[in-house]
Image (cartoon, rainbow, N blue to C red; front, side, top):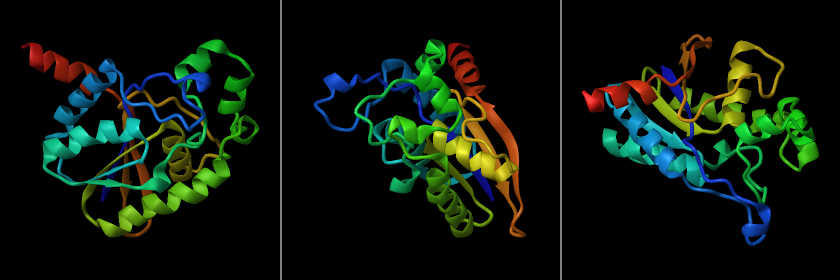
Amino acid sequence: MELILIRHAEPHRVEADANGGGPADPGLTTRGREQSARLAEWLAAEPITHVVSSPLRRARETAAPIATRLGLELEVDRELREYDTGSGSYIPIEELRAAKNDDWYATIEGRWDVLGHEPPSAVGDRVVPRFEELIARFPGRTVAVVAHGGVINVYLAHVVGLDAALWFHPEYTSISRVRAARSGERSLVSLNDTAHLLAVGRRTEA
């Protein structure tokens, strides 16, 4: 079977002091909604039989157009949430990378716990069994999963045998593919593909 792993589209930035003290759960920006629409159009030709999403709003809003386009019911799995789900703010990883501050280095080095987040080991213990469960539930099928950069990094590190947390930067709505054999082998087929963000736009304008 094939797992299509998708990072959510671009969400709004959320400051802690503007969030009323609760966990940040931003929805998509206008650009993010356009990204998710292009993604859904691109995946319409795929033999996808099931669509799964993280419970966070940015993932659900990315996954919903895919499920609608394919005429499928969207499954929401709370175990696919990101490592910083309880945070009162949402600062895009691109902004952290540009800042090159202590938070950025802690993030890329996997020291998520010092930032008050779930550590990579705990994320792995949570998400790897969920992906394996999907593989067992849908043999011979193609399943699309919309989640987060940390979740995707941790699972793909498991697949390729890397001892790393954030070892690549998934772009918004990027597609990575894992092929799962009945024998237990897991292969990374493609990584961080964003061709749809260009190709669908060109096709629409033609």
